[in-house]
Image (tube, rainbow over all chains, first blue to last red; front, side):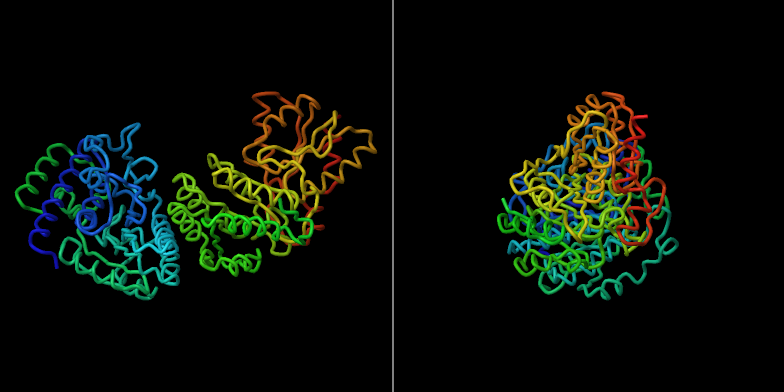
Length: 277
Length: 314
């Protein structure tokens, strides 16, 4: 359980990161707003409270690592990294423009602070397992944090990784599923049903928890519990709402990548500033 | 430099190179996809158990894990049959390794018809074409044990990722230790003035070597080049022999489309248009059989090569 000061700080940060994310995408006029917004709370928790990192030394030896395997959530990752000081905030308005260091999908060769390149779904998961394995070989006490999507979990590579990570007893790998129940073509239940996602991970011998992914205290409790499990990797399934914090995108099928007008952005930001989600 | 003359199989040369590198560099690690006993990486596992990982029959994950390990400063060698290393794990090798500028050495064994009795399902004819699409990747197709050993070490030293294409069983001892073997530089096995044969890989270099005798008897002055490095292509040597002979024959244990022959033809089209012909698998899928049968079935014999070389001179 987070203390009140920390909780309030993280809530404020989550609001700021959501506003920055909306601004990035609105400046371009279109983007992956849905899946970027649904992971903001866990991003904020990891970057402002949990991970051992140093923005002034992005490649610090022994640091915790973070892989956003659902690479299309780049905009909220970038908003977080910019706020942490990995690069100037004015880069955010270059999102997806020619020559930018902030491409649509996370790219470790371009963006300071990005620990691994992702974009082809499923691939970041295996890379994260390799990173966790490398930390283990080196005898580091560090952790690798991984976010995958629920739609992404339809990729076979996710389950190849799942069996590998549990076989290797990667207790330092803590993964999150952003279970927002939507994917590009609609609701997961209508495309590929993911309702038994908990039992799938249990079946692969992972430590599994399920939480409200927009509840910072629940995220804290789950991460701290996961860190105590050293003999197998952890999966924290986060029930989330796609586009959470950008009201025009909530509850619609087309929110994976959608047009974001300046007017909609303005009203969504005003709502966030007024205390709404 | 290690002498590989006492080794009985190409896989022994591969593993000798990797184990020597692992002895010298603590960053070297090895990943297998349930083919440890096929390649003989059991020796690596025994010697460096903390750096050996059997990823099971899951090649995509294996290559992704290798990429993650690379980002942690390790230099992984990952192994499977060529069909799986190339076709099955291609997106992972393309993106997680090469696009992400990581450093992984991917071994694809049993190239072309050398898969023999495993048959068409296990015959990579497309791996050269696939791997040639990846910027800055080194592609090796060594023709003997010594060059295999030395080129793997040179690929490691280059700092690039590589795709290592090699048969496992049997071995040709062509180059005595001390022979100048240089990554990216073809080896001129015989000089000639009428036609130049560029052959890649053990099977085709062996057959092309025998073809030289046939051509000599026919009064043809043929050059033979062992093109052990497919990428980067030795364009200097290609141009030299195009100018010198005016006739180029390219022999490869794989498909024409996207292959070595097409690559050389494209280069010469720009720099020195030259009459060419090609020995490759054409439009066929693989099939089962022993090497002698398959070499004949796919038109890879010394006689086939000599006929094509002579045909160029008509």
